[in-house]
Amino acid sequence: MADLRFYQGLGPITLTEIAALSGAAISDSAAGAHMINDVAPLEAAQAGKLSYAESDKALTGLAAGVLRGVILIVKPDLAERAAGMGALTLTHAAPRQAFSRIGWHLFELREFDGAAARHPQARCHHTARIAPGVVIGAGASIGEEVRIGPNAAIGPGCRVGRFTSIGANVSLSCADIGESCNILAGAVIGEAGFGVAVSGGSVIDVPHLGAVRIGDNVTIGANSTIDRGVFGETSIGNGCKIDNLCHIAHNVRIGDACLMPAFAGVSGSSRIGDGVMFGGRVGIADHVVIGAGARIGANSAVMADVPAGETYAGAPAQPIRSHMREIAEIRRMVRARAKSRSGEASGD
Image (cartoon, rainbow, N blue to C red; front, top):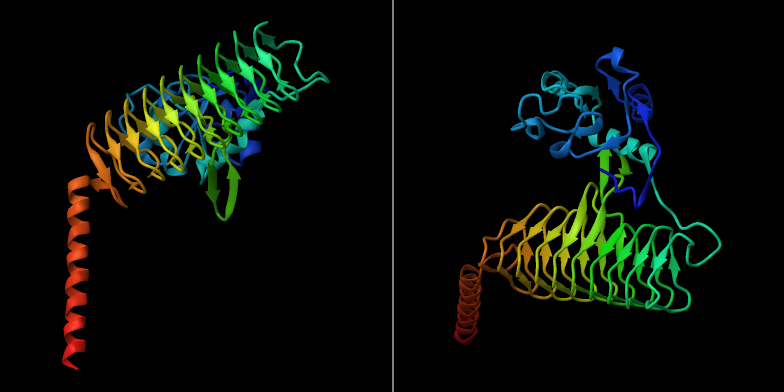
């Protein structure tokens, strides 16, 4: 599942090595020599790839045999069920943490190398305008009429589509940028997100082996951040306009023509449909789905799904009419209390 434009494969490794590195136990010791060289989320797992499942719910709904040949790290009480679905299992009390210990033994992020600021293996169109101090990694592709401001860093394998403008001090890694985009100064696209695995007081970072894909005619504001996916992509559709100081977390999917004013934050794996409009400083919880054409009022905290075409506001966000009725009722109660206190004071 790792995109080899951005990552270097280090495998394969055996199940015995996986067990030693992660602390997991192999359910079938005879399978210890079995080798893998890739990872995948459970929903996209294939034979020969490593995945994990933390709960019975994660296995529910999977078709019989769909896990055949998949190497799966599970809690001990799930091993029999997973094996019955065809998986080769390893057991660990904290499967996500065990899985996280393996990722960087299979892949490493491609880094800037060599003495030249522009790597010899980078491809830059002759019409691109590249300011002083820009660093471009191996395998990067810079399109026609691209402008790149001072001290920007374009990571190995990144693509910048034609007519796109990259501002000063922008950092791109694991990123595919479309045409006619405008990435303003200080934006950071493609860094790892906030993914951790916690067990028994131990906290480790979860490897992010995905990428960022940005469509055409997209604006990303100054000092905004867009995290790459843990698996697969964080994606932003065509025509989106994202203001300064916004944050898009890992594996978020944003549709076309969405508007996002300053200080918005979208948590991991949320889905935002086409034409959604935020007010300023909106916060979206993880795994939330916001339907196409929805509107979210300023300062709202969206904790649950929002139907297409609806307008929500508040913290937690709710339909705008309900929110306004609550505000009106609170104001009525405040006025009534103030009037009552005023009457008591007059009586004294």
